[in-house]
Length: 131
Image (tube, rainbow, N blue to C red; front, side, top):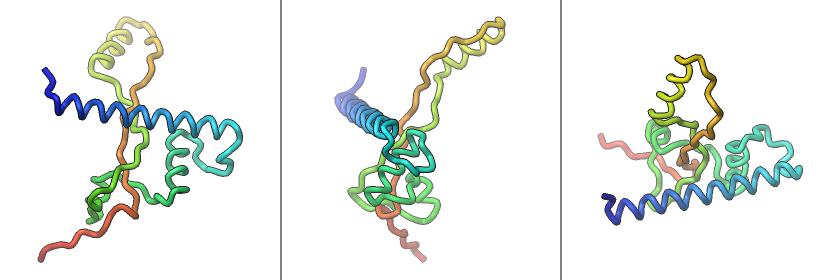
């Protein structure tokens, strides 16, 4: 049974995912109309990075990547969202393996793209190390 807090977190995740879907569709539609010409990477994530760069958010990295560089995210900063690497569930991987063993081809299934949370250089600061 899910707690009220978990339901709220799941709802927030769902809302962020829907907002990212909407933004992605909008950017792809604009690209298809001829906007964003000259953008080197015309993938959905490339368009999202270009969109964020136009708003002043450059040098995007994950929380852990910034941490490795000795930086921390400023309090109150909100992550910028892009799509992560597609993943398949364990059950889906097993199903594909079974089909391969039987010599059958797998039917195409829509990939699940997780949301990736990034922070821009302007959202972080160098952490001060204690001596």
